[in-house]
Structures are given as C-alpha cells and as structure tokens.
Image 1 (cartoon, rainbow, N blue to C red):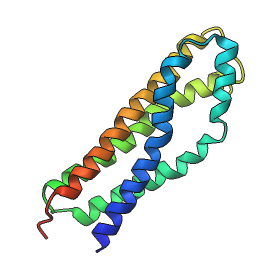
Image 2 (image 1 turned 180 degrees about the horizontal axis):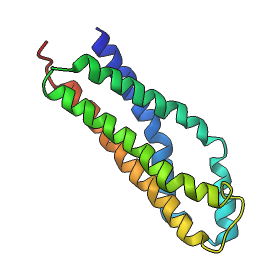
Image 3 (image 1 turned 30 degrees about the vertical axis):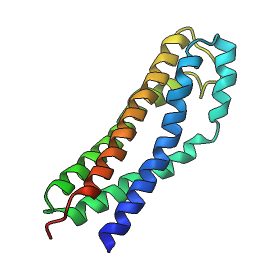
Length: 150
C-alpha cells in the first residue's frame, strides 16, 4: 500500500511541476517575438512562481522515496530512477541557465545589452525543463504499469 500511495504522490507532484513548465513552453513562441519593453511586461506574469520550487522539491523527494521502496523490483525501479533523474535535470537547467538570466536582468526588471541572448537562454531552458518534466511523468506512468517482483 505504501508503494501505491507514493506512486500517487509522485505523480501528482510531477504533474504539478509540469504545469508552470508547460505554461512557459507554450508562451515561448509568442514571447520570443516581443520587443524589450513588451517582454519585460510579459515577464511580470511569472512573479511569485518561485513558490513552485516547493512542488519540485516534493517531486524529487517523493520520487526518491518511491525508488527506495522499489529497489530490487526490476524494471519499475529503473523507470522511477530515470524519472528522478529527469526531475533533477530540470533543476540543473534552472540553476545553470534560467537563474543566471534572472540574475543578469534582476528578474526581468532591467534589460542589459545582451538581453536577447539572455531571453533565448531563459526561454530555451524552460523548454528543456518542459521536455524533462513530460518525460518524468511518462516514466512514472510506465513504472506503474510494471508488476513488482517483491
């Protein structure tokens, strides 16, 4: 029963982490066309979204706990570990690409000379995170279809 509960919790957290990533991804194509002042105005829509970090932490912790419970369970374990790696990789993308762009623009309140490069870096890092979140969800779903061997 603990495995079932952790599967549900992991899936919920992973799905919730996908929500802002998907929002970024689907708005990216239009936002890349904006001029500087319009882009700054559009970025205000994301004020407060840093609280989604709690959801990502929940996804990481619940998926790690699920992997521990599924250790030696065959394919389900491997799929959950891969989902955990995908969720962790979203953080790698954030801290190495998104966060530096946020810092350079003071969270998109000023536009430095290289703002267009920073915008691409910011937007594409979110696109990568979207793909990784989607893959994590798929892997968690597929792991639930596997029969545990213990």
